[in-house]
Image 1 (cartoon, rainbow, N blue to C red):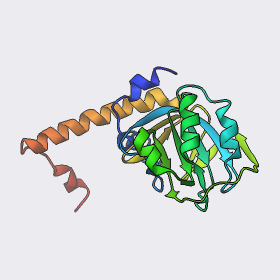
Image 2: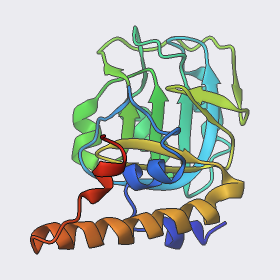
Image 3: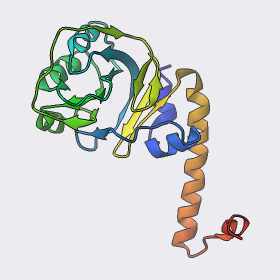
Image 4: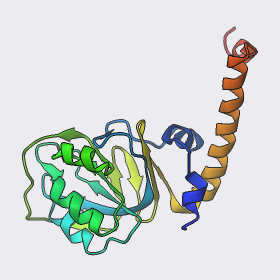
Length: 202
């Protein structure tokens, strides 16, 4: 699946979401790191609310190019990742974090330009008691994510592409991108055709 980097290079999360019938994509997570885009394979982790034991455990299985996708059930009382996990993940070749929960040490993520998406920020640290699981299907902000799915993130948010649909979705997104570029060119030239509205608004 290494070719997915070429398929999705330069495509926005918005375009890819549109290519998935606008049914997939986050709406409650935000980038904590700045503008660095994210593109990689999902390594999924499910944790108990406010507990990051299994994030540490998942790092043992992490491969270069993985994105750690953490289902924290949306709980924001305690941060699940911070600077220590940032450093440990980067050393393993992990490309970023997606956390349906809270984050801390945001200055470190910004300084390092290490992609991290989360629901909220808190200085309160996590427990390390478990339980948890690794490489199962997880729910992230209402999106089901399976191990190996493609994770694409930018300033607009995140979209998760099922691995077996990646090629088709990329082709659809490229087609939409070309269409958008034509529309923008028409607008710039004063030649935009909005007669499509007439069939909808009567």
